[in-house]
Image (cartoon, rainbow, N blue to C red; front, side):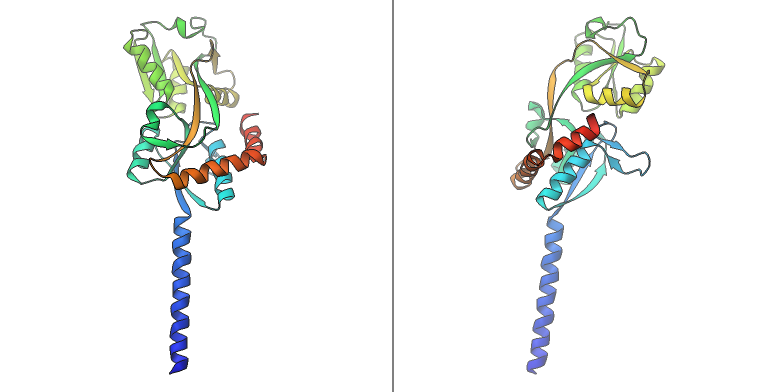
Length: 252
C-alpha cells in the first residue's frame, strides 16, 4: 500500500511539474505582428516567404536577451492597433511612428529609429522638385496608417492637391507612381531609399526631408511588464553591439 501511495504521489508530482512547465512556456510566447511591405523594417524574404527585416531581427534579439519567444504574423497596417487593443496580438513591431495620437491608444517602448518623410516622384520628373511644387491638379499617394498618408490628407484638405490616394502596401503605390496614376508619393525616407536601392532608376526623392518622426515597439495600454522587458532588451542589445550589427545589415 505504501509503495502504491508513493507511486501515486510521484505521478502527481510529475503531472504538476509538466503543468507548470507548460504554463511557463505559454506565458513566455508573445504574438507579434507587422505589415510586411515597409522595407527595410518590415518585408518578406523572397526565397523563404518568411517575414523579414530590421524589426524582425531586432525583436528576435530582444526576445533572446529577455528569455521569451515570438510568434509572428502579418496584417494590414490599419489593423495592427485594433488587434493589439482586442488582445489578438501582444506586440506591434512594424516601423510605427510613436506619435502623440498613437500614445493615447497604445504604450510605446523607447524609440529606436528617427525618420522623416520625403516626396518621391517617377525618375525624370521635371515638374516636381519639392513639396511646394504639388498643385491642386495632382494626385499624391501615401501608405495607410502612416504619417505619409496623414500628410497627403492634410494637403487634400487644404486644397494643395486634387486627391490623396491611400494604399494598403508600398508596392502598389510605387507601381501607380510609375504608371502615372499618382503624381507623387509621400513616404518614410529609409523605406523610400530601400525601394530605390532595390529598383534603381525607377523613382527619385525631391526636396528636403519633411517632419521628423521616431519609431517604437507598441504594446497594449497598461502592459508594463512586457514593455519593461522590451525596453530592457533593447537597452542591452544597444550596449552589447547587436543593435549596431543589425543596423549595418539593413541600412548600410
